[in-house]
Image (cartoon, rainbow over all chains, first blue to last red; front, side, top):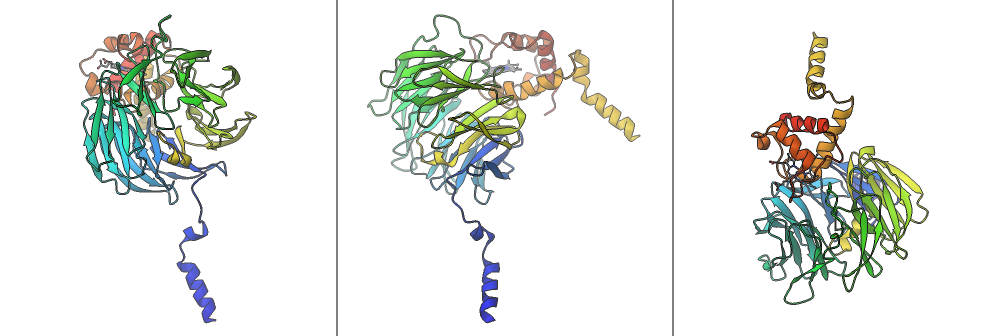
Amino acid sequence: MMLRTLIVALMLALPAAAAELRGTGDLGVAVERTTGSLLVLDRSEHAAIGRVEGLGDLSHASVVFSPDERHAFVFGRDGGLTKVDILTQDIVGRVMQAGNSIGGAISDDGTLVAVSNYEPGGVRVFDAATLAPVADIPTGSRTLGLVDVPGRRFVFSLWDAGETWVADFSGGPEPAITKITGIGANPYDALVTANGRTYIAGLFGEDGLAEIDLWQEPLRARRILDGYAKDDPALPVYKMPHLEGWALAGERFALPAIGRHEVLWMDARSFEEVGRTAVHGQPVFAVARPDGRQVWVNFAHPDNDTVQVIDTLSGEIVHELKPGPAVLHMEFAPRGNEVWISVRDANRIDVYDTASFEKIAEIPAESPSGIFFTARAHRTGL
Amino acid sequence: MPERLVALLLAAATVPAAASGLPPGRAAELETLVRQDCGACHGITLAGGLGSDIRPAALAARTPEGLAAVILDGIPGTAMPPWRPLISPEDADWIARYLLEDEE
């Protein structure tokens, strides 16, 4: 009798969470840009399992994850930095750190979160545990293309000044700054390769890109794909391509050409152009499936209802789909078997099998944009 | 009384479209274009990003005609693209007035 009472009492005292003990490796989030909310996604269930609200202006928002894949750091357009516990689906920290910001990164050791800002320019760095300010790096310029690289470092570029800076926090909270000047006019976004070695900035004001080998001393920028568009003038650009997705597919990079209906192929060692694939519109993302066998491409307005799939070996388009109005983002399952596609104006996330191209699931979402799976926690530069 | 109020509100809500002579439904499409596609550079609240702040206060000194011209032809040498390939002069006119009037 006593024992039974005790057991019942114990059961009542145990938090509900114990019954729902679970991992986070198959979870992710989708940004709902107009409602300022985050949808929590379950890859195994092909379902949304919750919504976290109150994150402010999330147009162009991006997300990084803590090393334990439990917390998502959400970088809002309005300068808000929000830390969300994706298990309890609560906001556990939030700072308004600037007036207008554009993405962030988490250090390799998971202790620092950095945000790049348009207004005021520069980068602000916070303690990942508490969101307390750690460092403020004014640049006097709209700052973007922020990535993490090994050695507790962040790399970012200055739109107005045409520079790339490296902030090294290996010595503590006071960063050592290295400036690479004269990389070219108006860098608009950047990527770093998965090994953290090569930083490539797209240049809006130039017919080419800037490449920096982070393994070489002293650091310097080299112009690559110089004059790739010189033969005929570029079309008007209605949306800046994203370089984060620039894909290393086998021994070649697939890059969205700016102002052209083309994906460019670049040799990963020589950085020479080795081909082009004509595509449906101006590419926004050209992302490789994690194994590098396919590159999936979405497009700028007015062609943003379409996705094309390029076979990496042949460089040919092997499939085209029309998921619906305003395809904004594509995120692969970590092993590449599925791709999740946000279709903003259909208020839906579609899940496709990447081998058969069959649609597996549709998940309702409010104006979804970026989709981010927790596996990103273990990738450099994402 | 409430009906009058509703009618008034409805009338107020449709003024920009009604004043422009755009085909039905076009105003709503253009509003989405401004928020989402202009918003890609200017921010969804139009407070600025890579593109400048284009909220009414920032554009106070501008005429609708001048703004419509900027929208149609872009600003050469900058990232502001010409929209003429995608929208009509009437559309640009509506957007210019919408930018100047929008209360946010």
